[in-house]
Length: 414
Image (cartoon, rainbow, N blue to C red; front, side, top):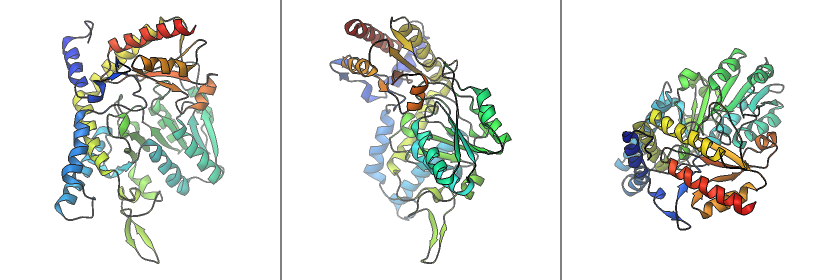
């Protein structure tokens, strides 16, 4: 990779990049530089192969069938549940519910927890740095139940103002929902402190881990999180798969989110009784192939090592911050002390869409716009940013390519 990294690290990176077939192509006759990892990560060959293998050899519905294909599919599906349990250190696999992704997981909690536990006059706290998926479901819940939504503000660096959070908490606080890391700014929030303070008032807490799962160690028991969500496609896995972790007592007390097959125990025309967790919240035929392949993605992360991933990504973020920061006209947005590998910026006098389009002409894929965080963009008085987000397969040389392209673009457009 570079002479500044140990040889074993460079060799390991070469081996990692070789596992991702999509990276080895040209875009607009330029080598692909993929810096849109906060939107979705690319998939190693083992994940792709697992999907093909499932549909080629094991395709069957799960849990109900007694034939060999159904048994194999069920074992593979439930193996992933056990792998997720270990990945987040849940106390039991039944606390892991498969969903379509983080958005569905949050909606599930907003409806199922809210239906049972939230009443008129209650208060729900979120933060300014939330993705729309962790704003709108709580707005809908508040409208439905007559509750009040309150928001933790952020400072100019993009860090939550915890003194203000303290002021928002009260005996009326029923629920707190915040992300582990910001998709727009990369800010890592002090979620353990947030959870501890909420629990002092008897409130329950959901952590949106969509942007944290690929980067940070997750221990839901050590955090004492009531709920934790993540999406497979942001952890090198397939799209259309996610998980909701919830404490058993809460899940058992909550109402079903959707109804249909699998989530029932017995149905008569007079009354239906519901299945045990996690199946109570897994109505219908799920994305079996995606769940099975997700196991490979989690094993890839575990085998690569979160510590190694963090070391490499922190180096990339530091290098990008220094390199892009030297370009005249580039203004970073979000300068928190603790960040995952996200670098967002604006270019003075140039629209972020123009930057994104012209970077694509150089083979560089970044995200532009408000990143589904419009209230956060309003806080910074901007329409959007250019966001470069890094993963374990990225390199400093790719950052150099982006920097050189940015300098040409700025000279051309100024």
